[in-house]
Length: 154
Image 1 (spheres, rainbow, N blue to C red):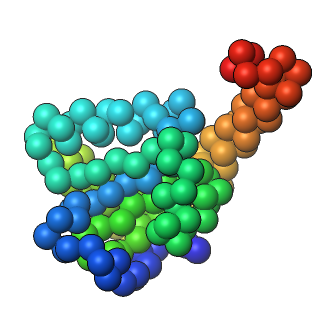
Image 2: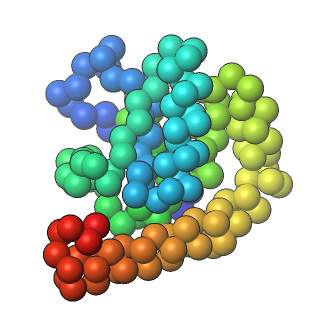
């Protein structure tokens, strides 16, 4: 999948009036990701914005229920809007920023035809790739410690 918006039908059973304006799926086990989302959450709560935040490290099955690949969501930020449109990577950041006061300029900027492909490439091939590799290494270290010392090693 690319970072472009992918149209998805909204869940048939969900009442559109009860769905959030935007739901963001992120890897809360990643310290950088967690910090970034914590910042956005504070803004959305203080402004009482209709946004939801889903930490996939706390809900192992949410990605499966939505038909998303867990590793793909761990690798790049994902968001789904009220209409069921899926945004991945830079498109997800733009979707979030469009909802947050003081960030709309950033959404506008990275959505420009010249800037979007460059920012998407940098995010996909440098930033997200580096964070994913660091988090995979951290997960392997934790798994080794748990294997060697049991659950108290975590």
